[in-house]
Every structure is written in C-alpha cells, then in structure tokens.
Amino acid sequence: MTVDRRKFLGLTGGGGVLALCAGTGLLPRLAAALTSPLAAGDTRKPFEASTLDAVIKAFGGAASQASGDIDLRAPEIAENGAVVPIEITSKLPGTKLIAIVSEKNPHALSAAFHIPEGTEAWISTRVKIAETSNVVALVQTDKGFFHAERLVKVTLGGCGG
Amino acid sequence: MADPMKIRAALNGDVVEVKALMAHPMETGLRKGSDGKLVPAHYIETVKVACNGREVLSADWGPAVSKNPFLALRFKGGKAGDKVSITWTDSAGESRTDEVAIG
Amino acid sequence: MAIGNRGWALWLSALLAIAGGSLAAIGWSQDSAQDPVAEYRAMMGDDNPAVFAEDRGKELWNTAQAGGKTLAATCDLGLGVGKTRGAYAALPRYFKDTGKVQDLEARVVTCLSRLGADTATLVGKRFGDGSESELESLTAYLVEQSRGVPMAVALSHPQERKAYDLGKAIFYYRAGTHDFSCATCHSQAGKRIRLQMLPDLATPEGARAAYTTWPAYRISQGEVRTMEWRLADCFRQQRLPELEYGSPAAVALTMFLAKSADGGVLAAPGLKR
Image (cartoon, rainbow over all chains, first blue to last red; front, side):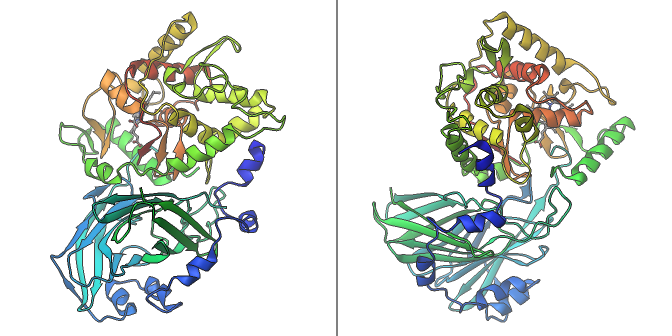
C-alpha cells in the first residue's frame, strides 16, 4: 500500500469508508443481542432536550433533588472545552442511570450510562463544554432522580493554535 | 474503517476496571471544515460493554462526547482471562467491536 | 487549518495592550502561583489518543511504497537501517548521505522521497487538516520508539555544532513587528499569557519539560502535531515569515532545543491543550 492509499483509508469518514467497512470490526449481531433499558427510538429522545428539566422528563421523571451522595469530579478550569474530563460516583443505592448534562451546550444531555446490577455506579469520560457553565451529574435510582453540579470554567486559551 | 479501540481491563481485588479509547471524529455538525462548509454530524450513539457476553454497561451518547472518546467503568464478577468486549454504533450506522482479555 | 480565529484575535488584542503599556491588565502575569490548569492535566492522565497515530505510523513504516520497498527496510535514522528504538533521542544529527544535519521530520522526508514519494506533495501535506498527515503519523510512531530514553544529542560533528549555534542565535534574535525573540516569551520562570504557562526554554529543566513532550496530541486540533508544527506556530505568534518545513532554520532551532534538553527522558507523544 502506498502512502496516498493509506491517506484514502484515513480516519475521516466520508463516502469511501462505509463501503470499506464490510469486513472485520462489524459485529451488529452482538450489538443487537444486548438489550437497552429504554425501547429503541426512545433512547434518542433525551438528547433533544435543551434543559435539565426536559432531560429528566424525557427519562420519565418529574423533578430531581440535589444530593451529597453524588461525587462529581471535573476540573475547575478546563484548558480546552473540547475535552473536559468528568468522573462521577454515585453512592445512592439502586443507581441505574448516570447522565452528564450541560445546559449551555446545544443539546443539554451529553451522555447517559445505564448501570446494570454488578457494575459500580462510577464512570469516567471526557466531554465537550461550549462555555463556562455548571456541569450536572444526574442520577436515577428506584427512588427517583438526584443530581450534583459543579462549575467548570472553560478558557479559550487566548493564543496558540 | 475506524481504527481498533484501545482497551485495557485490569482486575483489582474483585473489581474489573476497564479503560477504553475509541478512534472517532465525534463531529457535532456545527463545526466548519477548512473549506468553510459545515462538517456533517457523525458521532457514536451507543456503546455496549460486555464481559463474556454479559452486559456490564450500556451508554447513549450525543455529539458532546469528545473526539476520540475515552470511557472507564468498573464492574464485579469478572476474572482473569475473561473477555471484555466493547461495541459502538454511530449516527452513520457504522459499528465496531473490539475485545480484550482481563489481565 | 482550524487554528481558531478567535484565539488569534485575542492574542492580537493582547499584543496591542502590551504596546499600550498596560501589561498587567491583559493577563501577562508573572506569579509563582500554581499552574492553574494542573488539575485539568492531572485528570487527563495518560490515556492519550496519540496511540492511534502511533499505530498508523507503525503501519506506514512497514508498508511497501510505490517501488515495493518499505521504510523499515531502507530508512536509516542514524542508528542503522530500520533501527527505530532510541533513534529519536539522538536527533537532530549529521547524515553523511545527505551531507546535512536533519531532524526526524526532515530525515523521514528524505527516506520517503528515496522510495519515490514526491517531496513537494509530502511537505505540502505536512500538517494534516481533519486527519493526521503521513508525516505526523510516522513521527508519532518513531518518537514513541524513544519513550523512556534520555535525550542525548552528540554535537560531535562540526555541522552539528554549527546548527546548534545557529539555533541559539535564532532563539535570542529579536525580529518581527513586535521585536520579539523566542526568548522574550520563553526565558523567564512562571511567566504566562492568560492561563497559558510560557515554558522557560532557556533552562535545562524548562527545555526538558517542553522537548520531551513534543510531538503531542493537540486537543484543540484533535490530532498529533509535530515539533516543527510547534515551532512554526511560534513563528506565527512572533509575526515572522512562515517557517519552512525541514529548513536549516527549523532544524537548527530543533537542535538548540534538543541539546538544551540533554538528559531529559522522552515521554512523547504528549498531550497538550
């Protein structure tokens, strides 16, 4: 394979890539066999919400209570809003959902994690944050919805590409 | 074709900690490319993590998860040698599965 | 390229403010307070998406080019054909076959052009836009091959010494509309622009910290960027003409920084904002 061909096979996606994806790495069987807690179609609904309240509604709740049993770790200052590390631990018994919500983003919901029995109510990931704002860790248990929040300041950097 | 994921799964006591990096552009649909046109949205929508076929996490993502996503989780009931597999499916219908043995 | 116009504008206003004499107001600060983004960096840990570039680079290194040969079977980075482990830690160096001092990037261009690649095209695509360029992927792989190895540039050949002296001269040479040198921004401890720590490259500690963590996965670009990219970007900040890729000036500056970082243990590709 030449350099130019390698470029063509690059990461960027686009037309050619789909066609080339017929072989290894495509295992839709496994994906389909694993069940999702919300019925298909409903899982995308919460992503249409633009506020925390609307997100909670889309998950089938009414309101949420602040809780000291949710530990939300995020840097006070993020050097770059494109990658903000977030770590959430819920000590609330029966935690079945952990979600990350940023109301100033175009879609309030960034990610939702469904926690089955046997998996710790802990996740660590990285999200985009459009501007300085509160990041909310939303948790659903058998008793309803709970949340914790933390202000993350996003610096534009000011200089340097 | 997306590059293989980088997955590590380590046993600490009775807890398995999984860390994964996925190669994916996670385009929001709001970013302009070098040609000045909007780059179409293209992002991972679902992630499923299984241990020997048993689901240990399922996630729904929007475009706000960072490019080349990072995910870590911890679960019980895994032992050394068990297979942890991760499958993502994106908004363009592409999908990829990779697996690693618990070390 | 996706270098934010907004950042550029802010930077410009910062410069204008300096010219107006209101140094403190725009955020040049010189305090010993902790790096405000230390927590952010600590949380990022070492899960670095640069691994994808390293893998792509490794594949390219072992992939037959147009003429049927691979870089692995033909390219000498200074330690012998195909020898990658530790090679980067001794670069830049003088190469007899080209009669030039070359850094890693210039050397890889030489090797690829010998396998039939068109140099102008390669250099034209040196910094990828939206996806990593071949040179970036290859650099990521070859640099990773020196992870954990201390920097040890020899300066034994007179040409190497000359390159070092030239690099040092450029580092302290004031030029451009603002009469800045590299040293204006990079020779004081604890100096920052807004939240950006300005590394003090004139001390061994500062030079090591910077040199051993480039090339790096640049978060703002979502891709691995090379040392030559870093230097070209600072040329831009300094309002100098564009730094030509692989040019004697670029190699000389790299040589000066590499030698200043002597003994620093390589930890690149790093992870930068």
